[in-house]
Image (cartoon, rainbow, N blue to C red):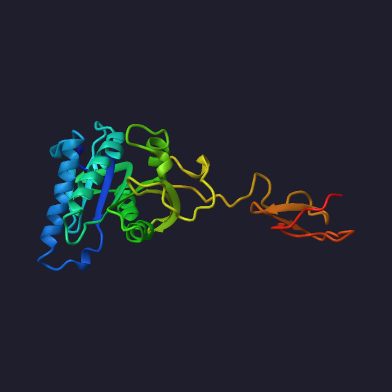
Length: 271
């Protein structure tokens, strides 16, 4: 992809795609060229089927993967929808005849990207690469023995995935809080062609947890507004909620027997 000299070093908002191969260290020297060839074959086929020319995107070789940036004139939904669908289908068919099936971790994020003569850089690049390399993405691909796992940033999920569209089903994504080099973030994961993966989530993140930059703010800790400190003047009969299922009482005297906790498998007595 060509960039004007005047644009050198200036940030552009682009879609960043990080593609990593599963278990690349387990390939011998004679096998790695075959792995790399398959990566490029599935990528090229997906680009062609999605109507995106290879010369329209920036692509960097990473040995056991590829780093891609897509300019804003190409719809992000096309890459998230049709391109991902074609990528998965090509990979699935190829793996039927491969002695060692290729597994790919793909991550996407939109943000400011800077181009220079050596490639691309910026926080958006770091985030996309971090999502693809995350323990959740690695674990999902291995646990499910899948051909492909997709990870997207929280901002990309909310802005493009959540509204849905052709080949984009938000109900097939699950979120997780993960820790990257830059801190803790929310990411959304999908196994193309399968239901939403089980990630042990407890509650969906609220819209207020995402900053304008796409980096989530502090995680929802279960308190409603005004519930953090118990409120009031600290009187002895005050009660406040900690989390979503537990009440905490300070200096409270109960006049009769009380039950703390949930009744499970027992009949409730009527007063």
